[in-house]
Image (cartoon, rainbow over all chains, first blue to last red; front, side, top):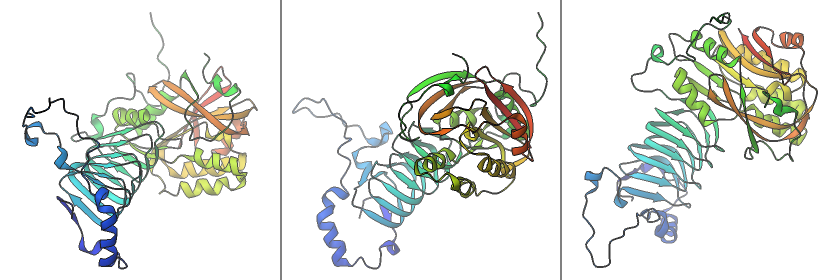
Length: 196
Length: 213
């Protein structure tokens, strides 16, 4: 089991026998659930020197221990929740909840699920609604079919999107919005006469 | 560069709308600020809801969120357009549009249809216009362009909003199709249920139009 992640008991397909599960695990476990070593920061500490010990809680940034990868061959059906940042390169169908953490859907990731997270970075495919408390970032290779709700939404050129985007910012009411133009007036109103 | 004159240029080989933009020009708009005003007036008490019929553009999403705190729906009809042109199934385009726009009526304060009507025949145009009128709230606005020269269209345009009256136009190749030229009376007839609120003929022979319901 992934440390920090819970996968509902009822999610395993009926035909996934313990034998099959263990057979899959034997082959895939090495790269399925590995920590994200590819993104490990390069250190410049000289050989033999002790690296400075800075607890993750003091930097506020996720450490290696706080990131998990789901590899390309992983298929999860059901609910996935956790308390660590997560990168998905596999397939998830159902629901994903990482309320306090960052979810990255890698270029190979295929999600058919409702997604709730602090921030969501999409490089792969998502069919389902995405809700983020901070930000949704659709990268160039992203394909999203669903509704997005987040205070900030960034969309790179080339991303495919179908659905609605609701960037409801906390505390903003309809009357608080900026005017569409400095001299906003009802459509159809006459042009102001130029005076000198 | 004269505004919207891009449409009269020859285009490179068509590869579909998903390819990257091939070149960019800038253009100013007289009617778009009126569209924004109309939407803002329309939704004084609630957050405006806008339907974008072109591809998703990050800058536009940001613009509408910042300026109008809008909820934006994206239904890229140009995808259906290109597919129909490529497969030679343009007769079924109206049904494809209807399937894509299967949304509740009276839902939108504003609809952006850009130059979509240039690419479709009169019959499909009539169906689409009727659907837009259905989707629009009473008082809502539709913004679009209508070319007036019967040329072959070989490129699509992404309209990147830079300000209330300025766009950056990014072009990408399209499967060629002859422009459906609509006279003013054709437009009025086609958009039954909507009224032409603003119509400006640009130097490039493109008619920039704002409809209201």
